[in-house]
Amino acid sequence: MERNRWYKDAFIYQIYPRSFKDSNDDGIGDIKGIIEKLDYLSFLGIDAVWLSPVYKSPNDDNGYDISDYRDIMDDFGTLDDWKLMISEMHKRNIRLIMDLVINHTSDEHEWFKKARKDVNSPYRNYYFFRKGINGKKPNNWTSFFGGDAWEYNPDTDDYYLHLFTKKQPDLNYNNPKVMEEIKSIINYWLELGVDGFRCDVITLISKDKDLPKGKWNVALVGKEHYLNGKHIHEYLHELYRDAFSKYNAMTVGESVLMDVETAPYYVKEEREELDSLFTFEHMDVDNFFGVKYLMRKFKLKRLKKVLSKWQDKMYGIGWNSLYLENHDQPRSIGRFNTKLEYHDLGCKMLATMIYFLQGTPYIYQGQEIGMTNGDFKTIEDFKDTETLNILKVSRKMGIPKSYIMKAIFKRSRDNARTPMQWDNSANAGFSKGTPWIKINDNYKSINVQDNIKNKNSVLNYYRKLISIRKNNDIVINGKYVEHYKQDKNLYVYSRVYNDKYILVISNFSDKNQKFDLMDEFKNKKSECLLANYDDVVDINSFLLRPYEARVYYFE
Image (cartoon, rainbow, N blue to C red; front, top):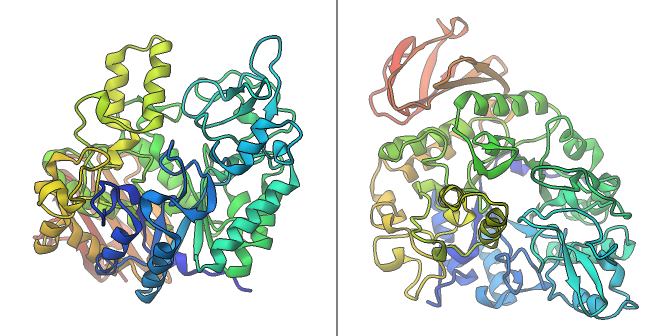
């Protein structure tokens, strides 16, 4: 069967269900709430939804700890609700991409509950259990959420491996039975009509069966023994062969610490593994060592260098994913040198800059109206397990509390998890109950209802941008060329295909910046396709105003 390429011309919208829309006023978003808002997604121009996990879960890590892969979390509704949701999506020509979390399960999954009780359980080798060594943990690996990666299991007097929280024990793919179980789960959802999967931390699933000691590393000790592991490509090809390809499912892999030299081995079509990747290098331009809490000042030249590298080196080889926000990142407005006093202009400029690159564009819920970081006041306002672990570990390491709290307020994952701001009524129209996490106080000025009414709103700019990009061969297939490479304020690039061009100009400064058109575009017929200021006239030479963005077509 020919592999489906629909995602190359699709806008995908990520829904974080707990915070999207609450239909029963218990303060938690749910599936019926999503159904209520499907017409809004059609209005926006969305082609597919990436739905963060809705499976059964004790909710230690907001659903990324799954206790039953074949059923729905009670907070979100029932499997029948889910079936109605996908049916209503498909009626509107909206596809559904589910989150696939198969690096680990919950410690409350039946497999693990049986494994931890009995060394002779058939499920024992579904996980990594090891005895301590001379009174110490089995090895020195550390967790992504801070601290070591081992938890003591008193029932059998040993330890189990968890690269994330202690309630997320890692699966052992060295055991072929684990792969068979996972393929069965994937096929179960594909049979129910799912159109694709976002594969959570998928590049970590192949671990050295000997679990050797790791080299010291400032962030993750032991990563060389599981990052892009020895068997990862055969595992992914097996999933493709026995599951994804049978249903023409689209896949995008979350690829932790991925570099542009390694990425093609995952996404070259002839390898039959994944269709595309989420990479993070551009998310690390304002931190040290890929650790978002180790903040450093944003510099545009770093961002341009990373984005240009991925555009150049993946062209004709593999497919990029375009995003500035998701459930693991803080909000983009106010982050990438964009000042909140220029809120609307900054939101529009960032969207223009990222979404005319080559790749599949992803919008995170609320991004399209310019939702900002949460206005949390104290540590008690935060719910995220990663955030609370980082605080605990950093204090043990002697990092000043004032520094880490500043980082948490700016970078915590909860910044993107505040409830969707639908209108200016109580609780932003999200719920009539008490929301599970604090509503952002600015909902009265930033909400969907007001954005719809205002023709110059961020939302209506997104709608226009989406309509311009759709079915645009230059944006889908065009080669990327960067201009003004050394400029620290302007990001300028063109896309060229069949002797037709799109030129994208973005000012990342709150000051006017001089722009002169490059010689190769002079004397060509031009048209301004999109601009975030109303009075755009000249093309040859002009002053770009604060956070101004323009897109021109040339032939």
